[in-house]
Image 1: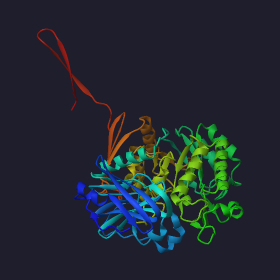
Image 2 (image 1 turned 45 degrees about the vertical axis):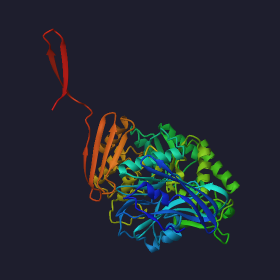
Image 3 (image 1 turned 180 degrees about the horizontal axis):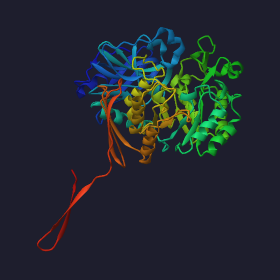
Image 4 (image 1 turned 180 degrees about the vertical axis):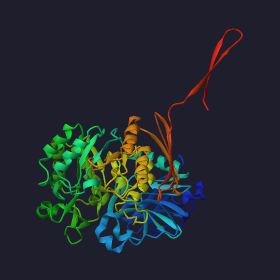
Length: 559
């Protein structure tokens, strides 16, 4: 859809909204756009009818700097300048597949931002992604606000995703946007802001039951809520039964419970490897390409990975049974990974958009596990709101810090922490943010003392989930773990972060003990200052006795 009028949001007036509102008729579909006044700006609602692949709602003038966002957990959330160009390694395009974008056919040749963009003076974003995929195409001096419907035909008028324009600085607009999204999607956030242990960043796939038991023994006194086994236990991706390195899942969960922890388990429920029994026996359960063959979603584990069609009734029954079985085994914490697979483009049993298929899959899992804690990972962010309790909000961390590495979702502690800062405002509103694991070991790592310290402080002051991933027999930075334990005593925190657009992050984090400050002047080099409120105010008492005998006590804060 071509819009001739381009809105200048940095020099904005109410009359500009009249350029967006009204009735439009395009090839194949009709669109009605309505505008409502909103605190800090405007709400844009629409109604569609007919066959539609994509709608351009409006355009606006591109500012010098924009905060842009990738569609899923691992993708970058960062500020770009006008001269920024996407430089995605060509040799990785096939391997990444749909993990890079729900629209890989457009992503690698264009500059896109998913769900929202922000500048120093305004914010534009969608409040939901229930049917369409909202995104922004950034071209030269303009930005197009678009809704992707993937060739859907609406015989009746269908309400579009709601867009908001907010006019203020990011530290005001971003938290307000988070609140609006939570309200739109009726979020009931879990009160379980967990602290725990995960096997992944120490052992990766070299993990077994014996190592699990050893770390359980060494975890005594750590104060964990949850103890989670990661990728290494399953027969194959899609065949979610224990391999010969583990006993029954009932025994695994029971052993974890012996130590007083919530048993946690990892799986990638929407992914099916080419070597799995599931793939060989049920190819009809998979998303298909145009020729009716199973469609590759991405490549990993040195294999082609296909996507479960979450609209096939028998596949839904299998998914339900899988999670009900895991829950019956004793698991109450589910880290579900590579979730984007359910949202790839392709042919499905039901005629739905990829976004609808994804939320149907998430809803199936949510219903099966009840009130157990669900941590999303590799997940489309906006469609996940209301379905998960926690969410990874950056790429995998790593035992190294590389500010010059490719910013494409590769494992890297630097980019993982950057995303924790740029997506700070959704924590405690949509879900609990998972900044990824703390690695506090002093051996078998390339992280410096200051890098470990900064990662820990940011995670704590932003009030995120805290999951440790270390061989607990190694030498651990006990001083940092003591800081973790101390902060958790204070309960939930109120947080404000400023400086996203400049890259100089200032965090004010307040709890019952007082307000602590963390100022990061150079994230790449880990230059920061940290000020902890003592929480104790010392008062000096002065007594004054009046002529009539009355006594007055005065209290002043000591210098």
